[in-house]
Length: 148
Image (cartoon, rainbow, N blue to C red; front, top):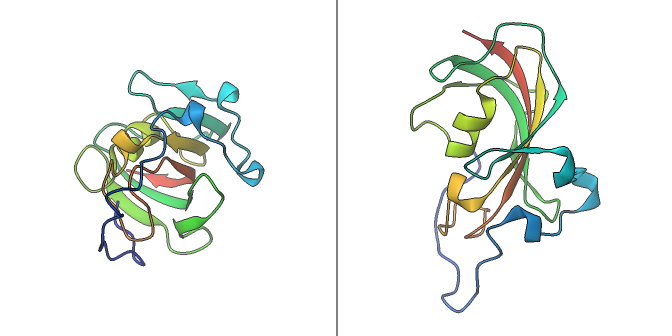
């Protein structure tokens, strides 16, 4: 995923241990409303929760989609988003976004809203990405504005 405000850059201290890679072992700030028991877990370990099921066309593996989103770290820190702004246009199935988005947006209908809890292996792994520390689990709120 491309982050307008994230330039990549530095790495964490070598002696700093990575956080747990299993979201079930992580404390999520209550403001994120993450109760993993209310999510569906895929075979890859992605957690998906439909907040609102849309009624438009369905996003498929190679669809072009327009998304409004907010991304948080588990402590509630926002690291990126465009909610209420210009929708972010991507083609699913390629390398434009993290694996968690490629997998987690498929099956959404236009007008739908989902929460995703993305383990590090489906995001940036042990690499630092701008304000996202190495080994981070990410939480997203996604609205599917349009699909083609």
